[in-house]
Length: 221
Length: 242
Image (cartoon, rainbow over the protein chains, first blue to last red):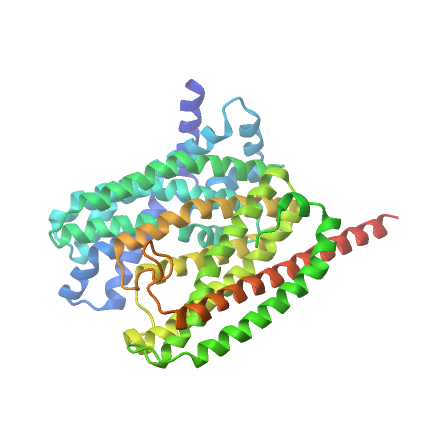
């Protein structure tokens, strides 16, 4: 148990500190949220119609940013070899890596998401749901993103490749979260979309580490 | 259509089989395709869709094949991942561009069909979106294959990606169905029989079999090409060593 908490502390410290921490993700997120009205036009009505969806898509993009460092850093300096040799199963190590990725970027982004959505003109009553969706969706983004990051280990231009691999995997959570937000905004039942988002996140947490560990073993072989 | 993997897993037997099977599938594809096109063009105009109904004979088999090829890709990837079999990997590698081609054909012909029928080139409808995501999966597979230099590592990484996609694609499909649907429902594979008169159904089935045979021929040919390429590389390495 102490090994796991030590690993979690190490991974979170690395994800938080070394370039690509919460500041970079939130900064990118704020940048996208600023560009949107500049491109679409400042009319409040038009912006308010797309605010929840735009905040949600920008969140998915922002969670792509630091993925390329998730395994690459440890792959380059040999730490991944040591993690593979340790008695902790590699699946668990990968899950902990994604969890700390989520703590360092997903959770701060979840705090920023309601602010960005309200800034774009979403009704403030939407804020708790956006926060909850971003929190759960961030978990799904971190665990599916980890698969892409692990698969593109050792590839040329791995960061770009990670995005190409991961974006199709982001389709269901983006749809479920966007659907829940849209339903709430138009006064319909939002629980179905939110429950499906939670289910996708749970499946990603359960199955993602298996694929990640297989990909890491392959990259190190 | 799927050749018995156990018999064909021997590369010598596979090469002997595909030497005559590939041209035979090509011939079957040409005959069935010509018959299907002839019947398709001589079929009467549909009472609602007019002459544009003929796009169906090209569009629907391409859409079926786009999913069928992903199934072949996933099975080949599974075999390659479990048995580390080079031929299974060559089959997966060869299936990806073909599948991307069929998916692209389905998207383009669907778009050409949608313009006169729905009045728009593209709608964000469930089926269209899930086929587009399928296309993105094929592109991701091809991109990953191209980015990894070590062939053995590329084989396993791509196999893992193909299986992740196989788990994810049904979820994508149901998520977009939940989201929105405008595309007409299934009209051939239904519990109460096909909702289509035989004059359209027969050319459609002929064209589907032609597409299937064409895929078989192209797949075998590109697997053969991949086998020859690997043999040539191995021979070049041996020559360089001696």
